[in-house]
Length: 118
Image (cartoon, rainbow, N blue to C red; front, side):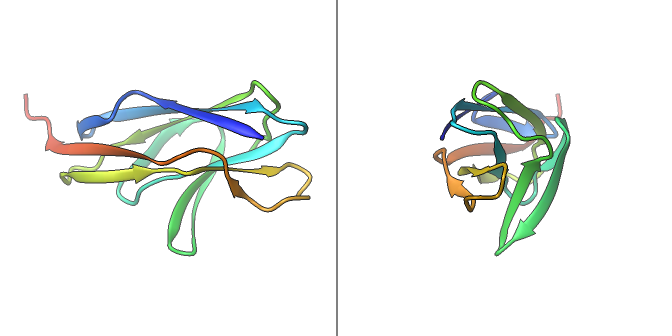
């Protein structure tokens, strides 16, 4: 199983939205896909999902399993607090539950530079 993650950028003002696309690039079976999201970022739109905290990490998990080539999308709104925020790793699990979640993407750090006042 392999997944790619793409998004709108790596630097944001508070209140700006980051579109994140997670694509299941290789898979022998359908997979449930989730991404690790930083605390402080609010999920404001995207494919049907559930957000939750587990073992001190925050996740967005998509409700529908993906097949090879399938993309799941979410939109995260940057917080008003300046700082560096880490997304990922993305994780996958066979849709039939025969595997546990395992890391399938790297992490990415996005910077927030406060709130845009222009």
